[in-house]
Image 1 (cartoon, rainbow, N blue to C red):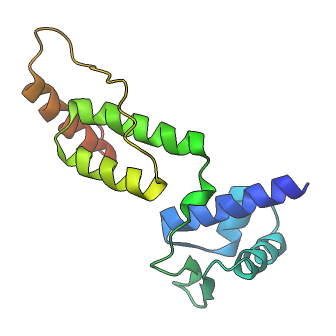
Image 2: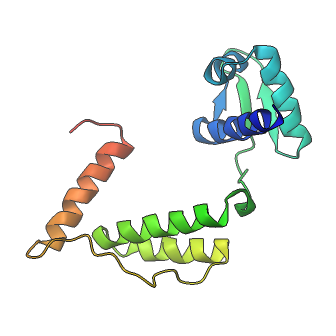
Length: 148
């Protein structure tokens, strides 16, 4: 039971980080618990040192401080490696800006360069510039939630 509660607490934090804010009834519905349980969870989250607060009123809700970030220790070493490998794969079809992101994450994760194997996802005879343009169009559509 404790693992389920801890898992829900992390999910609430991630949800608030993604959405910005949520009401207690919204969180209760999302996580299939009572509103009272959500308020207890928020108290536990706050007690753990996470800067969570609530705003009353029609546009209010439960929020995290704007500058709140999770410590890297919340990611396992395998999860950090998976993130880096995923970004390396993206770097193969996207512009060089990805190298800077990879460099920053390696420093944050305190991991050495993990590019001991390079995956080339391009096809022989393909046009890399055209593929980058197509990829950027698809990425923009996903980011703006637009159907293509």
